[in-house]
Image 1 (cartoon, protein in one colour):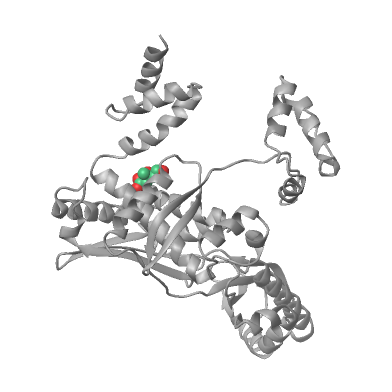
Image 2 (cartoon, rainbow, N blue to C red; image 1 turned 120 degrees about the vertical axis):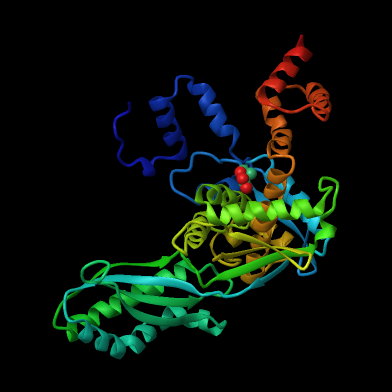
Length: 433
Ligand code: MEV
């Protein structure tokens, strides 16, 4: 075990790597070569990546794939997806094509409100606090004018600030609950700057006007955005569901709906069901430079909004029409943050024809819905392993360092044989003997 190190962040990149090699690695040359192999030869590009975070030692690649044929509100998109899981892009592409042939996806943004809170402790009389808040509210808003003026010029800004009494949940706990419209920005910096200004103005005025002290605990946006909602949907006559792998559309539709209903009532299934949705959502969120942790946190909180974790997608069969939809909160940006910094994010956004935040919300929701359609369709028909293992075959072949010729022979072999890890190992051994 190495000794604790102080001043690590001040070391040069090479010094950091050497410290790591000395501290943890037996074969230092191999480890050094590996780390440097992932450096970009374009020094400017490498520097850009080095400066995204602190203590960068190298780059960590994820594949950037694309899923074509997404027809969304009658416009065709090729969707960029950054993800490591082998079957995700293939499943998205397949679902996109399936629905392209059936009229495509419809999507609409229902609301775009973001939220931030100043959390504080006040041990005095609530009525006094309430009337103080009512008097000070205009000043709270005007004190942020230096932060909000550009956003306001574009049509966004602070929507409202409320005083919320949370003292029944926690002694003496209150909050300023503020709502914002941040247009094409995800808005985290804008919201947090406004909140910190509210807190400082609020505290300064309280010190003058209130008998009891008011202690600010923290000021931060909420990643729970239940009023920043997008809905995406597919529908078609049941008979139109007939396809290469759906021979009886009526049975398929019923079974598919049952699978969705199970995810609506059974949290153990709902979590995996929603994980499949997030396969699609995270991949696009990441490719477009958005914060997938924020999206994940908000989406799962929304899935539990009725006090029980449930499915994010729903299905109905009415008058011989099959309908499948998703409704989720998505706080996304297409300006600011990484969107103008990371070259591949810029590339992805250009591929999506430079969407507004609302357009991106629709695209991301559609990617989630498509992913879920693909997963539940496989689960209720062939099972998930067939497609998954077909895609995973290449990973196993790479693990065994198969040559191009071996790969080609084995891919052909597994077109008509079931892929399991042991079957692949056996086939490689047979081939090599
Ligand atoms: C795997 O990454 C995702 C699935 O488990 C989703 C699901 O079960 O619906 C296939």
